Amino acid sequence: MPSRKSSTPTIQPIDGSILGEYAVSNYSERVYSKVYYSIRSLCGLVAKRSLKETFDWDEFKERFTTDFGNVEEKRYNLEQLLEYANRKFGKSLEDLIVQNQISWQRRQEYAEQIEESRSQNSGVSN
Image 1 (cartoon, one colour):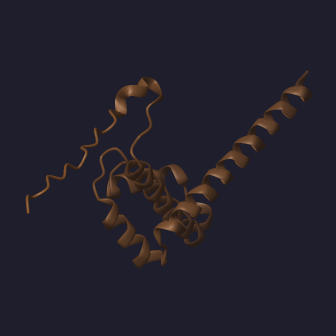
Image 2: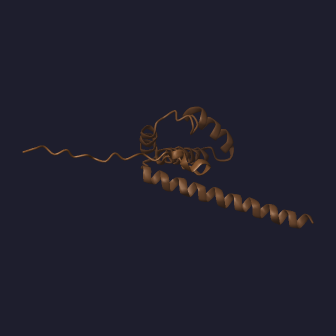
Image 3: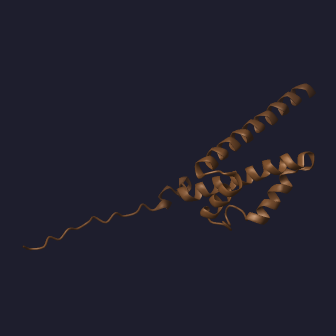
């Protein structure tokens, strides 16, 4: 019996640069930043609880960057960050993504409060 040649179609990958300025970063890169910032937020909240009034977010962020590197540097890979989050906080990838969303909501609410306060203050001074 003659052997059949089966040809599997080769799929041409889509060039990520085709969207130009509208290009989207890879999923793993977006997840990495969410995990990184979630860990930073969780560590900061724990430090804030223990240090109370002496806690300074800007100093903490600087120290965190010194120890963990910045997002672009990726001093630790995603698996290492996930293992750290699991060991220190009992958080999974899904938990960290939710934590990141909560953090963004908190920052947005804070920015709105600041804007509201500024607009009320500018109305009082006129």
